[in-house]
Amino acid sequence: MTDYKDMLHAQRAYFGQGECKNVDFRIRQLKDLYQWICGHEQEILDALYQDLNKSPFEAYAAEIGIVKEEIRYALKHIRKWAAPKRVKTPITQFPSRSFIYPEPYGVVLIMSPWNYPFQLTIAPLVGAICAGNCAIVKPSAYSPNTTRVMAEMIRELFPAEYISVVEGGREANQALLDEKFDYIFFTGSVNVGKYVMEKASAHLTPVSLELGGKSPCIVDETADLKLAAKRIVWGKFLNCGQTCVAPDYILVQRGVKDKLVKQIQKYIRKMYGRDVLANKEYPKMINEKHFDRVLGLMEGARVIYGGESDRTSLKIAPAVLDQVNWKSPVMQEEIFGPLLPVLTFYDMKEVIQMVNAAPKPLALYYFTRDKKREAGILKHISYGGGCINDTVVHLATSYMPFGGVGNSGMGGYHGRDSFDTFTHRKSIMKKSGLIDVPIRYAPFKNKLALLKKIQ
Image: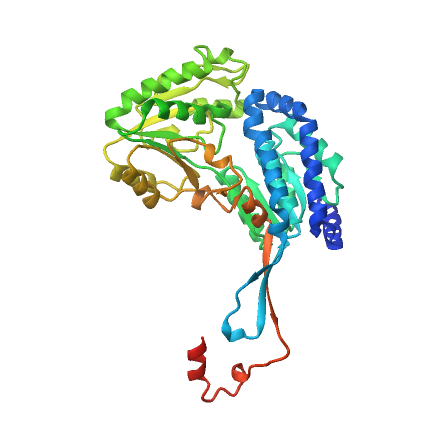
């Protein structure tokens, strides 16, 4: 394993010089990053196509466009975010003033996955730069072409003592996690997230864990079934289902199941054609290991539509699965592929019980026209975030945090929350030397009654 101590030592020394704490410096770095992306969009698109067969439209919308918006939003607000904030001071501390000083953690580690390799690497990096940190970036080895482009970008734009990129696989990950960072931002699976948290605990390093889980999509009898089907098909089969917030399974009210399934089949054909495997815009599985894993999840289920596969191209056509229960293989883990199991329910109480019996999901989607039922789902089920009458799009905004809860992760980012994630809020109280109120000093005889009056 490579020893990364020298790399961290160089970054700590650079951070100690204070340059990256300067807001004008941060703004310059973000502008340079934005211009590089604009000038190399085709290279990024080509790399994403090579790694995942993403079409230019999907790659730009779900990767490049989101990153560019994050940079624009940060540039617009960074001076306000980074400025000290004056806050109220209790009367017991008169005379004094209180402030909160946002300060960067220092040297941070960003570990990203392969499914959205550009967006899930550079979006958190934007937050780290915006907050004034140095960073070591570790992209996934499973998406080598996109990793290569990002490595070129980082090495062209930034000195290594400020932002570095580490390429490699599991050994590189393990070696990095043996080192002491000031913050770790990890996006990936639940199992690896547990390992990252365990390694971070040895150094008491704070972490953000952006994980996943089985995100339900609930459709009740009041829903617009055509609209629901169209948006479910879009969100589920985006990136061939390799999306952490993809609808993992459908819970549909029993009386409208057949109608919904019929509409889902219709929109799969409409969006991807009757021969999905021949569709050049349809993404592929990242590698043969995941190709085999996803095919294995269909065991025991009835494929009522699709599911064709081609090992040469690593493509699996969208598959709708019936005769699935909670013990089926496809319900034992996050699918992360183009399989859509369909389960049914009778009433909303049953839905709430079923979802709450499982680990808290990263996302939840609910299609309904009933505001009372909508309020019940929002109130009684805990999950990272989601949509009412849509899927996936809640993460494509800089105005709300994106993140999980419980088993699906901890911490959030995007927009202001990206800045806050990589920032320590330092509390300062500045006392006046003109007056020194004597009540706090011993001896305390006969002072308790006065303290109760003012506190």
